[in-house]
Length: 459
Image 1 (cartoon, rainbow, N blue to C red):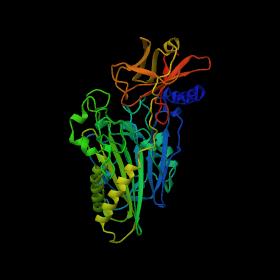
Image 2: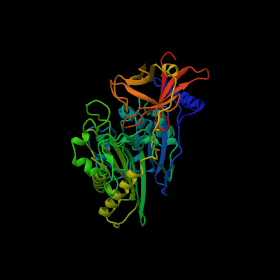
Image 3: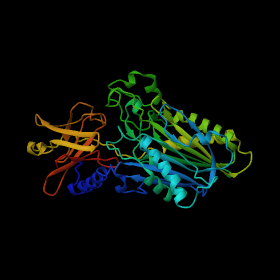
Image 4: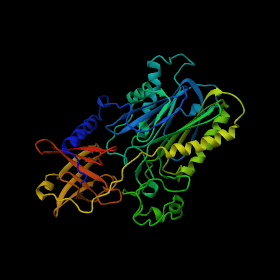
């Protein structure tokens, strides 16, 4: 019946809610350095990767560090970018000056994590205040608040420093890790599925190419056969499987029956941030062309790409370890473009599909009535649960969250005495938490990797 033991759920709830109540002072939040999950492994001592997460969000930071510094260029597209120190990459410097690229959640607040990496380099003695020895750190952020989660925890200087200090060569965590901890893709078509961060590596002779990406896109991830890779399909899609088929039906494919369960305002919640690194020395002009070509190529893997609601940023970096003229720069750019497509496909975490049982569980009315109340998930997110006509109903007042539509009641169908789901497009699950005495103390939305915990007001 997909029920969860009270003790296990209560323990998870306690951990999550402790973080949620500490939002005003994030110094009390626990930092997670690594989560179980797949890794991209490769040999390249000239770059190191570190990730750190506030699981209470969840939200996180990914740091790509270059211990011997690197040269860099940048390409920024879309209508909602958030970056730091990218102007320095447009000045045409051919010499290595970049210490690290930081990818962060938390929207504009997450830029604090970029500053945290820079100050940590100084505090740890890697850099100083001397001219020419100032830490060279650039970064970009993704929006992972509304529509992703219900609290407002963000990556800060403390989390950025932790990710830097955890950096090691040879392994890049894939999926729901670091800056990709709570990102999504496909809202353009109402898919509303979790994505993550991806990486891929290729080598041609001595030339190494690595691509890293955090996919938080309005568009949908598309494979090389044109198929939509992962999506909560619309009820009226029929046999449509290819992204091009959905694009051919715009705007009909984005109407109320196909679109996300929120208001009609533009979301501006989407951004894909990425890094392509090579050990080939190519100068600033070559790096700029690399950035432009790879960024342009990503429109094949994410459709549509760089929309009004996106703020895409790509960093192109060279460690300058290999000199020569072969392979040619255009070949490197092309291989890097294919490597980035591999990285995008690798960003999607494994997630079990939830299949509701054919018959709802039977729960006594007096027990259902005990769940009535208000549950606080964040400073702007209160879920109200009511009991009417023998049914439990849930609603959010300020905005929608998956099947919890703004201003509308959603009926909760029982899976067990404590677990329920909404029979909508996203099969949103809600579990109520009771203490050892049976007192209802809170609720968890979508228990599991992206769980959101709320405390019962007055409970």
